[in-house]
Length: 399
Image 1 (tube, rainbow, N blue to C red):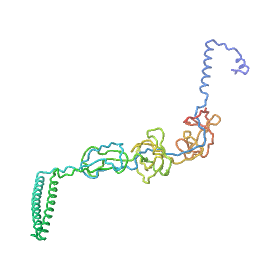
Image 2 (cartoon, one colour; image 1 turned 180 degrees about the vertical axis):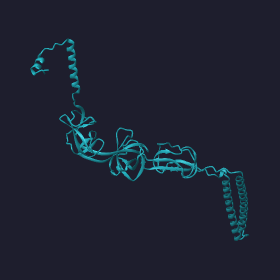
Image 3 (cartoon, one colour; image 1 turned 90 degrees about the vertical axis):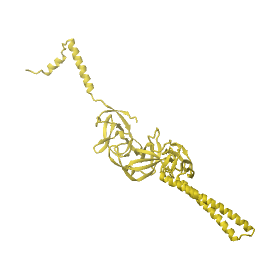
Image 4 (cartoon, rainbow, N blue to C red; image 1 turned 90 degrees about the horizontal axis):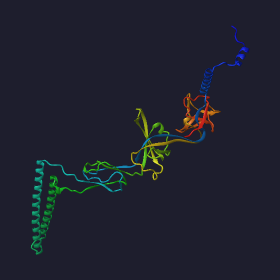
């Protein structure tokens, strides 16, 4: 069989096609489908967002949960045991130094059984009888003293007799006073209402401030030392945050901080006041043991700060390090390159994987010590589909 020569192929190509209308339609449709498939399979540039590398502030921060607290909280307790009267103060009420916040009356005596009550009644009766006898002796001594004094004035009695009568009168008066004291003691032992002193003991505030909590408001029998009310000065608010020990060692007293998630949109400026030297073991939500350190923060301007109270939940953001005029890269543009870091730089419409060396930084930016120049355009959120040399169509990144 002879193969067609080049001349035969050229003649076949120039020869008119004797096709029917249906065949021509099918042929046209096939051509359209082929062109569509080629168009769909043709590689297109990926739409990406780019950020421009610039110079600026690079800040390293840590954030953790914190609680507000009043620096000096006074827990006022009952100074004596007795019947506590109802406390009329409510949480939030202002109090002054020395203001009476509660009063305690002596409590009723314990109930006596029949035998003890009989003994106590007999003691009262004996004391009353002794008092009556002493009063009678006093009357007799008064009469004797008057009689001897009259005789002494008429010079019928000696000075010694007058002195003896006067001394007897004083002894009789002292005996009456002693018998009255014994009667009072006997009545007190018997629980007589007349023997009970109902003078109230006032409970005063040791400092000015506001009532934080009323621990015992209703009338009751309070024991000495029982807590009654908590008072504190709400203008002396501080924030206590528990940071990881590895973050706390990087902090310094006086470092800048912010209080967030307190209920408003604007963070509250603060400063690190103290870093406690003692760490405590805490269990995280994932069940991991962590060493936590208390970091105390003070508000930068307490007068203009919002009205925070005692025990409010907030977030504390502490600045660990700040570097100005540094070449920085957005953290959203960083990708792993082996054990190091890299970014995709847009050059001539293609993505170029560029290794970089990172410095310090935070959630928004990281300092770049080498690999990038000011003005470079890097891809933000490159994704897993991004590869070296991929065609891209860049759009400005909006933060």
